[in-house]
Image 1 (cartoon, rainbow, N blue to C red):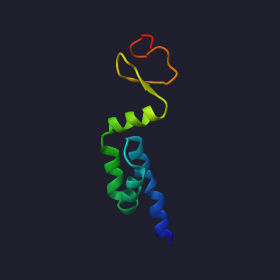
Image 2: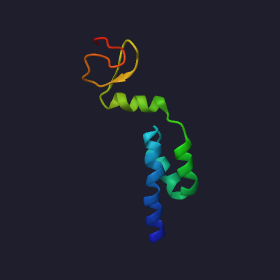
Image 3: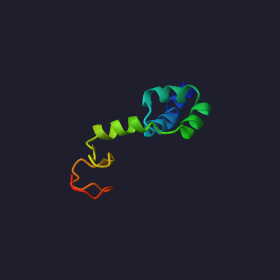
Length: 86
């Protein structure tokens, strides 16, 4: 029973890393709990999914600048990259 609980807890590490890179937390948690030795390096070396991260940020209240298409805060009046009023 203790080994099972340890596997459940240790699976959170690669799952969290993968989530910050725009991947599925649940899928990576299962992968990390089953094959931690493989999942941790895999999560560390994989590249972020920029499209998924962008969609997540837009869902969290951010918006795209109409001039440069960079993600900026929802309440921004001036684009921090472009310096133009939105």
